[in-house]
Image 1 (cartoon, rainbow, N blue to C red):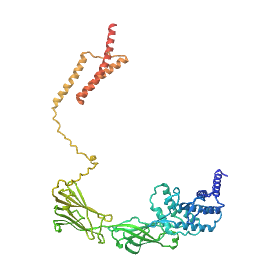
Image 2 (tube, rainbow, N blue to C red):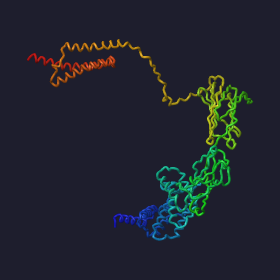
Image 3 (cartoon, helix red, strand yellow):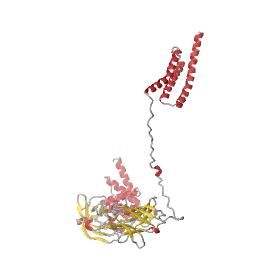
Image 4 (cartoon, one colour):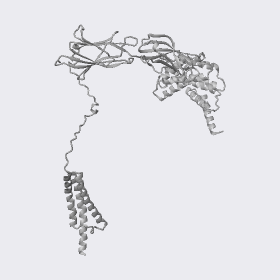
Length: 586
């Protein structure tokens, strides 16, 4: 027998021994799971005392469908119920004979009781959570729900018949795992994905998820209401119908009632409906859909949840009309000058007023269905030429938006600043496709002189990043070049600069310079060579002085070269003097 097979048999024997002697639910769970893993590798693994193991695990169950972790544990747990059901399913798979059907029925009833303890949200989402457990044993809704889902689907896979679990609760569990987004820990992320993979294909119910590719629709663009119905991982659903049952407003008022069947696009796997016939206005709505399978025999396989509610947002173009602006000169409201405004175009007005007059602005906003529209933001801004700004909320009534600025009561708020004020109107809302920030023109305002104790305008904020902005441009002055001397004068000056060099050469000839007495020994020859190279460097420095260098730079270099030449020249001349003395002595 191969050594690998011997190892497998040894592991199987040890796991069976643990199952036989233990009374701990976790040891049952991991031991049975280990045997199942070995069996899935192609080995023949049988649990001969499967029924007694089944009874031992069942003995840890409680009357409410939850399980204890062991005989010594007083607390029962929903998470433990999930791993217990998964362990029982493993025992049935490893059994060499059929497990007692009566015990299977008891477990099925326990599952029904367990689902009676499930919790829910108002949107049809269901989840499991612990009731009263020790803080060290608390697993959280994600792990607890995942444990129950794995346990129930595993037991349903080995049980005969169908479990008596409502399909809407399975669908609610799927919505829970899809709706939590990205969990904060890798363990929760694993439980989320694993639970969804189990719900994708199981013998209880396969949940069908209704979703909208987009939840924002434009009346001006005549968007279509599109609906997708798929499994949790996006696989295509069987043949079904999707009906629009109701459209509810924000106050749960019924806007549209009656079934409207959505058309089906087979290529895109999308159900769609034009929103124009629904006669809905801009705003937020709750849309109620009803899903029905076309093949009745599939109703025991798939869970549709019946009615599904989705929130949508409808946008459109808002009509802006009857806009007027003017100055009234008395308390009776007699308007001195009124000007019409087209707030959707770039039209500007020029107004003037004093502190005894009032500024009046009014306009209407209507929806595509002709109803009064109240946006989230309606502001009128007055900006003084000194950059001081004043913001006013434009109140709205059932018919129009209107604001009256009494300058007599606003002189302190305006800091008694006379002069030009730029007028700007801002109207904005998420449902308003044509929101705008429109300059209206300017107002020349004449206010009285400020008293001594009047408030002063606030100091304007300085942008801290302004110092990093562009600097002032540096302007260079390019002067015309000076007039050059005649060519003949330049040549004469060049000749004069060469006279010292010519005189130097004449001096060398008169002195009878030759290379006969050039030292032959290496040391003196090196000093003599360096000495002559230094003289050449002085001559080169003389040339550079006329071409490139200034006087101070030339003198600095000449100082270093002079010290160097004195040193090597003294050594060279000393050698020549001693050599000449030896020749005379000889």
